[in-house]
Amino acid sequence: MSELSIFVDEPGGQNGISKYCLMTLVLHDQADGIMELIGGYERSLRGKELPDIQFHASPLMYGKGDYENMNHEMRHRLFSSFFVFVRRLPIRYKTFAYRRSELEDPGAFAARLRRDLVVFLVDNLGYFQSFDAVKIYYDNGQHMITEALHGAIDFVFSKQVTLYRKASPADYRLSQVADFLCTIELAAIKYEHNEETSSDVKLFGNAKMFKRNYLRLIRRKVLGQS
Image 1 (cartoon, helix red, strand yellow):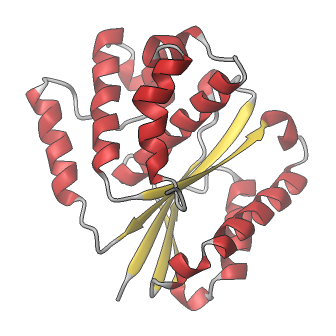
Image 2 (image 1 turned 90 degrees about the horizontal axis):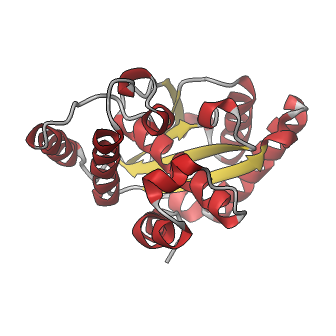
Image 3 (image 1 turned 90 degrees about the vertical axis):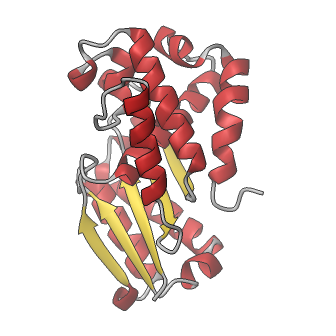
C-alpha cells in the first residue's frame, strides 16, 4: 500500500517578533527510504565533532536553548550540515506565509488558511490521489492551524485514507526539516522586502548569497516546481 506522510510545522517566528507567520508541509513518499540518509547525517555530525541534537532554527540563529553554549561558528556548521541533509532527502514541500497582522481574528485566519490549503490540494490532486493512504503529522501547536488542516484535508480527501498522528519535532527528523524550510522561506520574504536582520546576514550572507547558496537549491523541492 502506497503511503504519503505530511509533516507540518509552524514556528512562532524569530524571538516572537517576526512580522510573518509561516506553515510548511513536508511531503514524503514512504516508498523512498530515508533511514540511510538520516544515518549518514548523524555520522557526519560525529565526524565533525558536532552534537546530534534536535534541529531548531530560531534557537540556533540566536544561540538559545540547546545552542546557548555554542559559538556562532559551531552553530553555523550545524546549520550547514542540516542543509546538506535536507538537500539529499527525497521530499517535496509547500510553505504558506502570512503577515502576522492577519492573525488578529483567529477564525478569519483559519478560514483563509483552509481555503489556501484546499486550492493547493486540488491543484495537485493527481499527486495526492496516487497514494492509498495519507498520514498527517502535527503537534497540534496552534488550534487555528489544526482546524484549517482538518477542514481542508477532510474536505478534499476521503477520511478512510487520511490518518492523523500527533508528532513532536524531537521524535521526527522530517518535522525538523519543516522547521528548517520555514526558516528558509521566512528569510526569502525578509530579503525580498529588505527586512533582513543582522542575524540573517550573519547566517546566510547578503541577498545575492542567500539566493545562490540556499534558496535556489531548496526551492527545487517545492511541489510543482520544475
